[in-house]
Image (tube, rainbow, N blue to C red):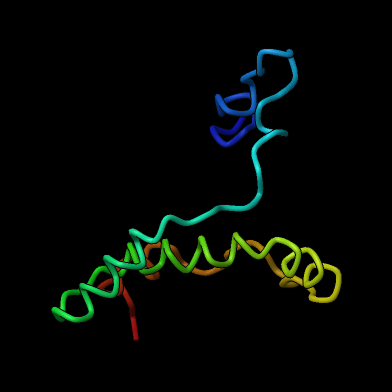
Length: 99
């Protein structure tokens, strides 16, 4: 059994007060208050990298357009190959490359 097996991830096992799985009630869309955007803009003005905050804002933007994501999923195809077949040691530690 894998550590990523749904039985090992608490949110998949948690039941709401009505006995139904909580994970089925979590919205697949995020809202925004604007604090991440303000932080990213301020950081750009000061020349400071805050890439994690910027990427988080982008992810929330994509999450908020659920209707568009649903329509796109009916038109766009995913990748043919979904597993990595390369050498992970070299990929994650370029010093080990033989090239």
